[in-house]
Image (cartoon, rainbow, N blue to C red):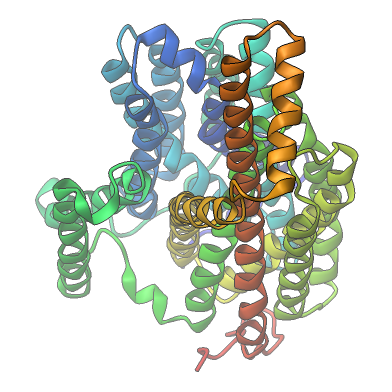
Length: 524
């Protein structure tokens, strides 16, 4: 019988705050770098594709470590492992800020990602186990605040730091928080007593190697595919084959090994299976829309990093407000699948709204209510999905389940961003060709527009031939901008339809509301 880890009073408050800070540290770090890439590029003399590695390396480190966290906690004791992860994360944050060259920075980001990946899942397990079963929905609400607000908080915070200080400070701000979190963890977090600690000889080294190779390869393919033109690049082809074979042998190994590094049998739980799929879709929507809105506002509307980051704050606050409300509803017996279905419907409405309002010069106020709607939708998705996934797991299975949902959320995000960038590049070409086909030189309206622009440039002191060239260039720029806006519209519609299609499947999940009893059968 495993000892109870339920905490009460101020001790529980301290543990909860520590865990949320750690989850926030890790997630903010995933997106805070996005707005600083330009400065880093200039500073390090790196190319655009080299600087992209700063994000890729961190994501690869994250995704490799997440499925192993439950096992590592059992191996070293949860408190020690959690504290060690914070220390690794903090030390490499400092080294990232001090990196001299681009590849040094990439290496430190990878190692920082190995520390950070553990923070996310372990903090979820710690919070879940510190609360009694009847209060777990509320615990997930509190944890969810960090997970949903984190990606939104990154860009405005990064934008502020880059504008007022310099890019290394986006890493240095982790240091004081990391030191405090380490001390609080060692003082307050307790480790469950695990019976199955393994000696070095019993460790599933083959499983670890296969997991790292397959997940690392897949993450590389997703992050770099668009830039390397997918399967016309031999590296991408080799890594895709490696990922597929790696996963096949990894699954076979984990199901036959005596001491598997990842307990795949926990996926026998129907709720968890459904939950992992929903977490993947949630990651797709969460990271996809967090990625696309700042991109659109900065590249098409010409906003600064700080402005486009600040745009997301009301939505994050709405989600923060929704979390405890939803947690409360679940505690009172609301069905998670109904809430998830409603959340998906709201997310569809948000996406469709985005599809409707995007233009080459949309005003800031036009985004406000649309993003509030996104905040409500996200609040209704995160906790019910987590509650559904972990509701019928006990003891060590909670950690294993949290690992799966955490990994699927990250992978969903990577998949989302990879798919969106590819889709947009393709759509851009389609729309551009379509627009150009309507601009024939014989069209009087087109000629009039060109002459008008030429005249405008002549009044600014250009010679007629240079003015004509400039008029054509301006026309081309307008076509490019319009094509880009149409591509963004397509992406919004695409994400919206994805969420809409999922609603019937969510409603098919059968749930029996019993405390601690199996809450749902497998989804057929």
